[in-house]
Length: 94
Image 1 (cartoon, rainbow, N blue to C red):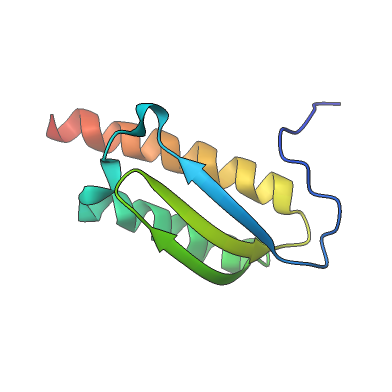
Image 2 (image 1 turned 45 degrees about the horizontal axis):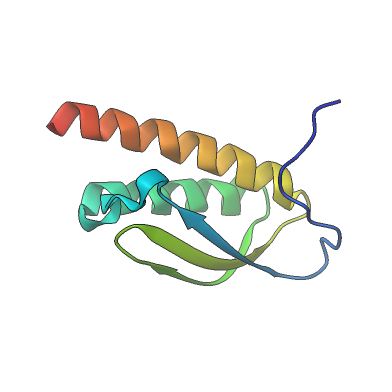
């Protein structure tokens, strides 16, 4: 069994989370990068029952308040998808 880095014990309650960009690079200054985040969250809302209570996206990190029946797996999958998509985006435009 794999070990999760995300320690979420009560799935009945929302969690406040912060996601950061490695090196604090200002990735979210590009609308395309923010759209990748939105697409990921929309997918999780449809397929993983993610409830998003609030969020703020800043230039190099984001905060969100969310809950889901399997929140650690949803976070892991979302971060994996968004990281790969943003790296692909930056390779295309740079």
